[in-house]
Length: 309
Image (cartoon, rainbow, N blue to C red; front, side, top):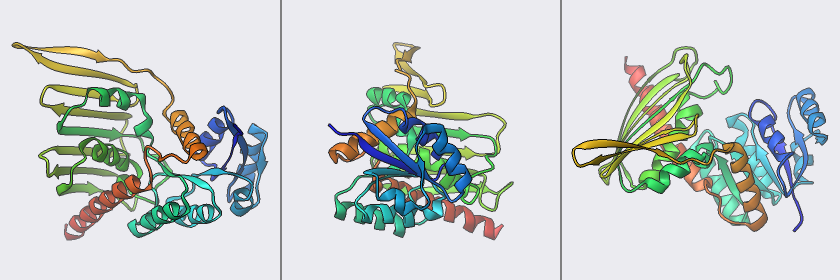
């Protein structure tokens, strides 16, 4: 079976990690990179002994699939170009910065029978896979995602930057229509919100409470899931988990076995496999568009509340 020819568009903080992994993945011919900053592109290309292309189109002409890791407001234009040229695409999250463009990408990929995967990396975290094996019916979910101020991705607020990871995971775990959303948030160092909380009620009775901050002194990526028979606690960062159960009159604690691995490597390997076989990705355009739609509702709710204050 021939190798899948892959390239990366945008080799900043995230894109250069994609380049690193593609250069090591079996079954991949890492062709090259493109970036608006030619110096940055050349530096990354030299590191992996590949070509730095002068345009995104020139790269698209010689690959089967590509990662698009550019600023969010360029995702639609670049992904459209690659899909129209018959190339499979992995777009970093969020899929776009508005729902209409996200839906347009989904429709184009479907029409062209191409893979459109979106970089919701936590779905490839081994800790989440371990949690799902223990999952029955979530009744209450609490997610915390805290990080230091990034100095990047500040063109979007923390909901689209970070909370969207947890939104997509929660939507995947609960799989029920949303009944209501109550959100709060505030800007501290950015134009958009840097701290946000959303309380989501689902029609099946589950409630999710999601808190996100990008001005924290500590790095936290945790999710807790309460169900009828147990309480599951998961740490994405450490790739560890525990399950608590009531046995007679006492609570027992058991470690959840997690086969640790690099989530991004698993994500890109899955993308390449999908591109090779034309299988549906774990997180396709439709799921990402749904998460974006909810994230936009939360962002708008926060903006409206702050405008009244």
